[in-house]
Image 1 (cartoon, rainbow, N blue to C red):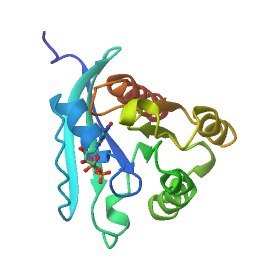
Image 2: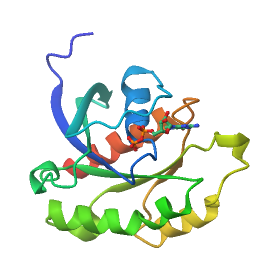
Image 3: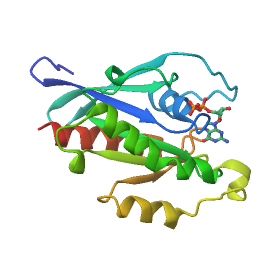
Image 4: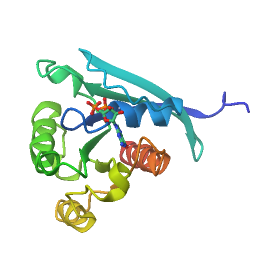
Length: 179
Ligand code: GDP
């Protein structure tokens, strides 16, 4: 397909959430269709990109996750969308959502914080066949609904469940806000 006449857009997406919730796994599943069981905590910031077409636009979705607390506001600045991930099996990771949201708003300092696009992902729904879930879906949906109707997705990076759908929503939301 000839994309030469299409508008090209680079969208910066920041992926936040407690360590171990599956941020890297979700990004790898979405971009490379790969899942790695091994836990690999490295340092710095990770960015991966994926191109997709939305309406008449060729969009490069640049997704970044942070591995360093000390990476300053440069990491956050210019973000078009913020994805916050928690593990549905770990209550504490759900309780961290507010902190991550506040941290993002403080660091990224968007011009209109009230309407900045967030998306929340509850990951690892496959774990133990769903028997080790600690955060009911309704609780997560209520949290999102009471904060300006943040879109909520439940995913399994391991089983590639709902991952494409979640990131497509991310891309569409970011494109809509950018217009
Ligand atoms: P991050 O620190 O948030 O980037 O988390 P990782 O992506 O490194 O994942 C932490 C661990 O959880 C790794 O061992 C992954 O293999 C595992 N993991 C990630 N997503 C899932 C999932 O959807 N289901 C299951 N069962 N394990 C997952």
